[in-house]
Amino acid sequence: MNAIKTDIGIIGAGPVGLFAVFEAGLLKMRCHVIDALPQVGGQLSEIYPQKPIYDIPGYPEIKAQDLVDRLLEQISPFDPQFTLGERVEIIDKQPDGSFIVTTNENTTVQCKVIVIAGGLGCFEPRKPDIGNLELFEGKGVAYMVKNPELFRDKKIVIAGGGDSALDWTIFLSDVASEVTLVHRGDTFRGAPDSAEKVFSMAETGRIRLILQSNVTTIQGTGHLQQVTIQNRKGESNVIAADHLIPLFGLSPKLGPIANWGLNIDKSAITVNTADFGTNVAGIYAIGDINTYPGKLKLILCGFHEAALMAQSAFKYVYPDEKLTFKYTTVYGVNSF
Figure (cartoon, rainbow, N blue to C red):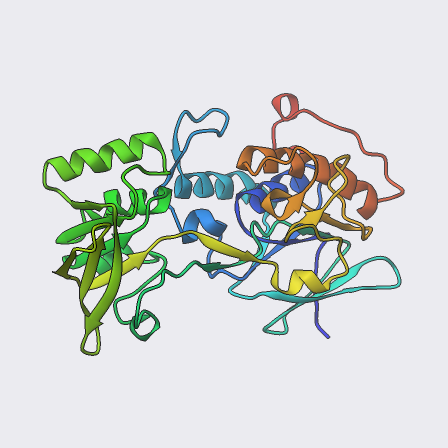
C-alpha cells in the first residue's frame, strides 16, 4: 500500500479546515486535506460564494469566496497537499497510534493525527414538495449554483427565503434575462442588507418578487419550461422558466463519520474544550461538526478551536519535543 504520509490528516477543506493548516504550519506540522467536494472552501464555495460575512476580525464585510481565497493565500507558505472530490470512508488506528485514512476512491493517507473539520458532515439539499421535481433534476432543476454562467440570458425562478436565496437573486440579476424570487413568507430570514436590496430591485423592476407563495408544480418536455406558483389564497399563476433553483437549506448527515467510534450527540461529535479532542486519542473535531456546552456555530469560533487543537496535536505528533510558543507579530510566518 503506497499511502500518502503526513503529520496531520484534515478531513474538510472549509474555512476552519484551512485555518487549521495555518496553525499546524506555525508548529512545523505537515498537513494533507481531504474533502468530498471538488474544490476547497466547503459550503462557502459550494453554496454561497457571494454571501457577505460580517464577523471575521479585520473585515467589516467579506464575501465567502474572498475569505476562502485569503485563507489559501495565508496557508500557501506551508505547502499543504489536497485530495479533493473524495470522501473519507474508513479510519484505521495503527498499533503505533498513527492512523490510516482511506477514501471511497481507495486513496490512503497515513497520519499521526486526524482533524475532522467537516462542517455539517455530508449534507443534502432539502427538497420542496413539488410534483415531478426529481424528473427535472439536471434538466432545469438545481439545488446549488456551481457555475453562474449556465444561467446566462435564461429565465430563472429561485425559491426560498434565506441568505442563499437572497444572495443568488442579487447575483443572478446581472446574469439571467429574468429572475423571479418566490418566498412563502413576506419577510426574509437572511441578512437585512440583502433583503433590502431585493425589495429595492423588485421595486425598480430588476427582478420579480412573489411573496406568500410557493412553487407547486413544474412542467416541460425534456427540460423545464414553466412553473406554477400558488399564493395563500389558492390562486395560481404559470410563468415561463428555464431553471428552478430551490434553496431551502441543507439536511446534515454524518455519513461514514458515524462509524468511526466517536461519541456523537445529535449528529455532532462531542469534544473536550481544552483542546477539542474526541474520545479517541489523536482525533480532533473542530468547527460546525463538533458540539460542547456553549457551542456557537461561527467561523470565528472554529478558528479559535483550530488554534487550541494545533497546540495539543503537536504534543501528540512530537511527544518528546518541547513546544515553544511564538508570536507571529514578532517572528513573522516564514520563520516558523
